[in-house]
Length: 90
Image 1: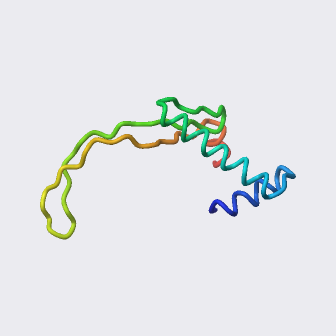
Image 2: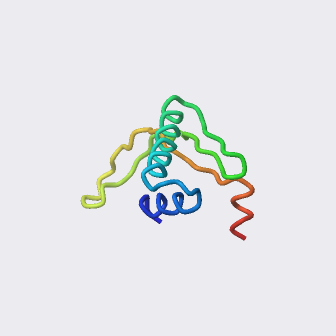
């Protein structure tokens, strides 16, 4: 499912107009992004939690040359599914 399909589904399930569903989805994405940027996690009970994890610096290989390269440490977004979401998929 892509973003357009998700907007259509949210519109259908909530009774909102597609424009309003798109605004709501964009606001949700923006709010989660801002929270993660500021170092906070976002927890949606039953659904899951979004958080930032730190990836350590490491060595890798350039795929064309095979030379060893250094990959810098970075922060990556992470999602962990909640209990209710996990159980609904069984």
